[in-house]
Image (cartoon, rainbow, N blue to C red; front, side, top):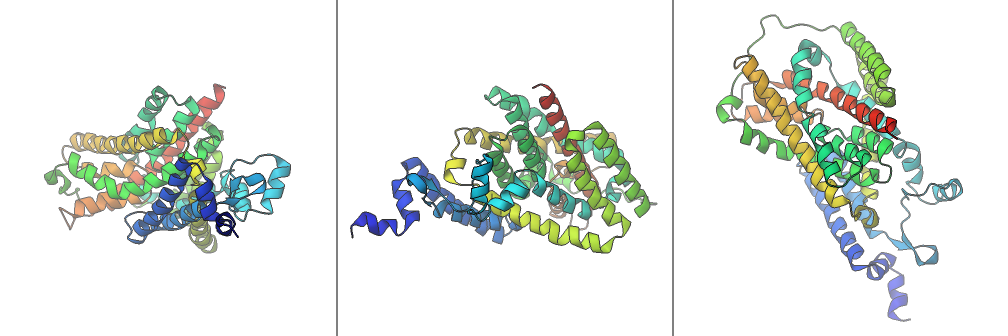
Length: 405
């Protein structure tokens, strides 16, 4: 038996040797990156719920490449490109994650399930206590979503692709997934992967942005104590969910599945439907998040990720999040001056709608200089507003660009 025959017993290694140098190096790099994501998730530097399954999926798919019919390289995980019905039916019986991908990921269902779970965890009372200031700051935190679009077009992306990568500025993974599926099916895999890789950076990077833009003295300021805080009843929260969902669906039908998913979670929470609440906020949310992370990792095969456009997407994704973070803090500063120093600008970072991560970042940044101060209720109101404004912008992009075809 010669060396080639022995090597073919270990096809992961054989395909590595048989690959072009760029692909081989990419596979090795992605295996290492997968291990790094698992480590950072375990240390909670990045979001463990996503990063641990994503990292292991990324490492496995790039290690588990084998020779298929005709000497073609492939895996037994899934094929994101296949669309021919006959070929799809065959591959559904072979690739073990293909059914999950085809029936939940590539049609946006998994994004809606995650959004439903997020809705069940949201207490919209924080928003209703301060609706105008919350929405105002949240709109400023969409600056990256807006300004990245013309920059992406100037860098050579189509309008559809530019809109999809711009949505990373909202720091809302399901929103990016949904928008890219609607507008950029050819690039939705790398765009979504870039989005979720960068969302983990908001927890680690935004504290430094806050320290850079907000002096320690202002970060330490205390919010005025409310003598008679407004109490929002469950009935009022339910009414808000029903009215807002109906109005947004009426204005932006193209994003109606997202609006319904978010607000049905809110409605279940406020209706006191305990069994449904436990189902949505537990098994549905965590199950969808697990498979989302796993599928994102498996989609990070070297042949897919080494797309010539990926470098542009990496630059634009981080730029969108950076501009949105700066925009949120600008919104916080505007409120600071309007209220004559009675609003902590740090809270503005919560307008970037990575719920509840950016709200926690704001609270942690303030506690570093003022351990007794609690700004979380204000931050959560703006955080929830950020989810809604992000969904509205996604709907606007999809509606306008679809109409332009």
